[in-house]
Length: 194
Image (cartoon, rainbow, N blue to C red):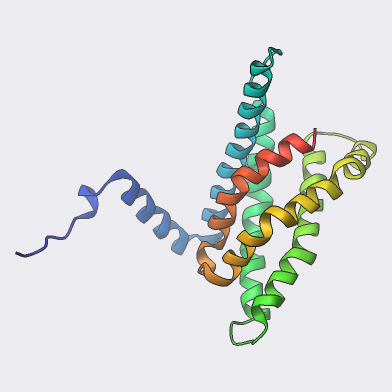
């Protein structure tokens, strides 16, 4: 019994979406990763707002309306910072620490966890402070109050995912993989920065 091929137009919506994503990723890698980062960052913020509202409602507290400006700030950060910075970081990692290096697994993990993660988290705090039109004093206060806590949580949460991402996920999909994890991470950061 012959097996028929499924034409693209007859495929499921998800299959077509994935295929279109792969085409865009190949043609416009940075733009595709940036837009994806922006969308997933905004969704992470909206998830945080939803969970916070649900928690308040459960305890009988007043529920705030959706903060569209907050979600927009996260979208901007993902679009302008997360997508491009992550793209170039993973590309450079491949050059600096090729898989032919016998210690590349350890070196890549240490580079990401000890250099990239603290710097990227600092950049997140700084850019969010600018997008919120807050002053330097507010930035310093938030850094003192929550940066170290957020960084320790980053090391706990992200380390196993980072290990998988930088060692087993093909380089063109690393930003997408990290964005899927970041969806929940941004929900956490939106809560801890308040």
